[in-house]
Image 1 (cartoon, rainbow over the protein chains, first blue to last red):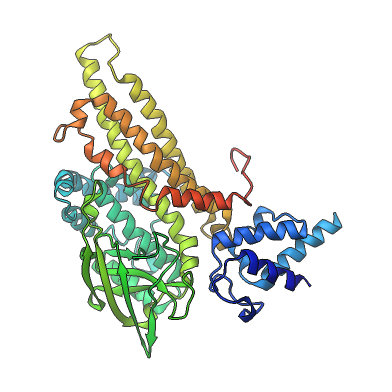
Image 2 (tube, helix red, strand yellow; image 1 turned 90 degrees about the vertical axis):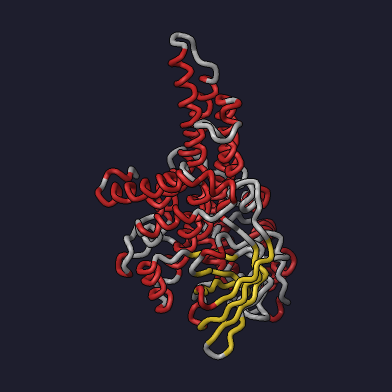
Length: 84
Length: 393
């Protein structure tokens, strides 16, 4: 579910030149063409969709390195939100 | 960070000042002719300042970025073009030191930089990419043990005079334009065919002509890290901070000249405040802002340098971008104050108060990586990065 949504948002906002279907969950998104502009747009979309806010310590390359990494970060934030 | 506080720092400063004395003598000729600052670079070589950043285990002096920045400022006061050559060389060297330290070829190359005092140049600009160095059109091709690269490099600063060029390209023929690597080619491994002539308003001595680059080298000369990482973790900060230190040096020299002018006027008519004194006070305040910005950037970089996550964080990128923007804009205002003070004597070439070269050199600061591009990048980051609200943090 989360994976599908993340992929959808990545396709919509990530401005990747490559087709998303060919990308594995652990594929390097930067090598696939994710730019700093694309990652910011994606992050805004994730914040809106999942009603979360990325804290400054997650605003780095690692968080957006792969689809799995994004999922893990968003899962963590959703968990924190629901616990609060 | 005062370099005179320890023996090795004081020694570095002495060496830098000897180079600056030579650079200063030739600065006007370098500027007028648009020629390479050969005397200054020869002096950098004989003072062995091209390899100070290399780790001691490889024969270098382990010199950190703050010390290198101080040397940039010393040189920037004498000859901005020579200072910029020194800065750009060390920006390239920082990529090797940060990202080539685990690679056998690059380690041995760094030893060679020490022994032969090699001058390193950069080829990141390419015809057709619109100035965004994080994109390449050309691709390196690996066949067997060798790699080949051909690049329409519209700018290679001092390319003709360099001993090696660090050049960016796509990682392979099918790679996305942002999937880049950087490769070291040594002088004997490439040819340069000049395509653009560097005849410019200022920074004329950097001789940043454009070339068609064709190179072939063993494939292990490709740096083992993606260029995206190199750019984020060593190039961004090192470039903005060392450039900032050079630009600060230009402004310092302009203010020094203006101050000499005001003092001479004050001596002629004791008791009456000399015209221009208020401008000097304003320039002094702005100069302090510029200095503080560069120093704060250097301190932040020192604090972050051991942590790749911090180095590639948005907050760090915003801070470094801000140093570049603030310094490059403010030095023009400072030099303009200095020009108001010195008047025609500053406007004319060949007087002790001449500021034409300073003003022209300083105008490059907003353009080498266009401020508009950097502001666009920062404004994008600020959509998510939260403003730092502390004073000391």
